[in-house]
Image (tube, rainbow, N blue to C red; front, top):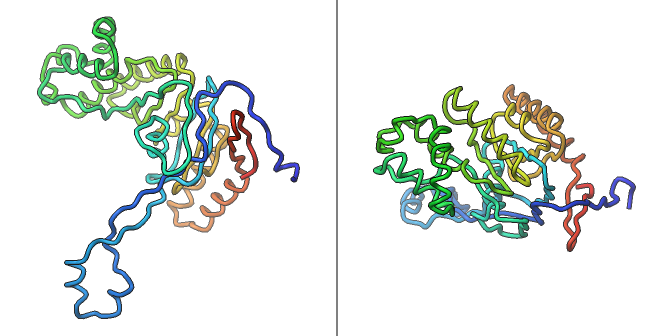
Length: 295
């Protein structure tokens, strides 16, 4: 074993351990099979009546992580890189094809996509949403006013939700979701909602949640938000873990990568990916302990 390959055992009390997780799923594809390309005449008819081909989508390739108490982990990457897939697996919304996730308590996904009832008023939806998240009625009553204040809806809180603009509805969803105080918190684009004044209020609330939580996972296309709020950054691309390290280092590499892509410099962009993956320190979970070794 080379010096660079020597295992380093991680000390401490992890909040979340992602152990060799993979996600694959089968989807229908309308792509022509080889037989269809051999005979041109009946091709159109066969495409109309044949069953769709099934293809395997590799949403997330083998990945292991150990997240310690007190860490704030930002997850960055292009659309389709596996960010939301990883969040759903950690939160328990999706079961991985392989591997497992271990957590010190139930992870809570904080998002703006909670399904509320459009015909009910905003204040009725506050009660409904909080009860759905497991609060008692006494807890709902205790937190009700702070939820309304965070939403910034004021008197509109008594109007039917179907009368709200998309921004008003998003602010209400965030305010309801942010009323919980979880040990393990997952945030998926929740801070990219509303006007500047609401953004300030929501960031203050997120700072409070981050300080109270054991660990935080944050997905955002706002790299400034990631840089401000995270102690560690994970960069995913096409289901692969590319980098896992200091926010400024990972974000700088990602920005260089996307800059080259936007200019059509695919060779330079690929070189950045390859260099990052070559220097990746991947985590291997062994029994009750975990270790990091060169990937």
